[in-house]
Length: 489
Image (cartoon, rainbow, N blue to C red; front, side):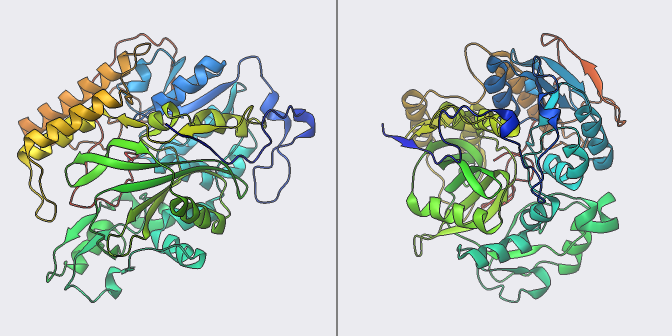
């Protein structure tokens, strides 16, 4: 296996005096105050707890390095709450029902003297952090974009305009009320990635921005119904007939790349695609160029996953979206050698990356829950636009990759309980679907009714307490899911 050097923005091994190396975390370029070293004997990081494995990956990366890990969530059943590498659990409001209260709770925690920074793992996280960046910057390090920059990503109409300016290819895209060619395969997708007041105005309180939906040729959606339900005018996009997704992952420091990583999704939760079940690390120069060109155009700061599909018609990478946060498959990135939580922590605290980061090309990794979902879709589901593999070939494909690449997002020997909790969550979801429960199934960490809904966080320190099972994140809604708003990519 070949190992590839990642670009770094700080010279490897450079031992810089923090007093001479101020961190510039805002557009004005002024150095932050000295809060970053206020309690260096017990530095802590706050990581929102969700159903996706990214929270657990952050804890497993940072806790062995002496960083106290504080997991905050609206659900006590988030797998990270059971991790050996979790030091403290904090109950938080559900951002899906009260985004303002969630932001207030995060800011309240940021005022603690031990909290050095907050890690965004879902769209709501980075939205509230960027929306009130000045307030957070007075308390903690803020290695995330300004709200003006974030809007250019969370508003996909602005994102595709930025891609055009950067010379990055994208599928033909237009607003629903401007699209008139319904004789080809298209998808209808939300314009925005989070239902927030800054995007939807007064509709944010009751609108459901929805997910990506396939539109068969020759049929036209009910425009008025789509707009009324979603609370905004969604986008229409030509469908790229390829379910393999390519991800360009990056950490940027004020417009400069600190580290990058690439993977190709080989299997999704469904045989038609969807969130990642199995992926392999790659290095493709054209993918690197496209990802960097877009983030450079945005003058990016912080984390980003840039998602592409490769158009079989011309072999060109076509932009699908940008996730301005940690991604669901983060454990795989770390296992392949790209330890992004550690890089993020070093950037936040003004410390250089101690050595040249590298990652292994050709490595593979699995989300076992996703592999089960893939096989289940082969047996029980049908997507007319994607050829369904035989069950035998699907089982052989999964089994072969499990043996060849035994890397798993949750299942590790020294921290097994999150894997068990994730399984419990999956079983509960399955039982809920079979019972035909009318209760909604939250896409991320769920809400089992055990956590408070006010803005004041509740604190629970031990990592070994029992948890309540909750529903886990869901899969795609159609043959090509271009939306990963729930953090499942």
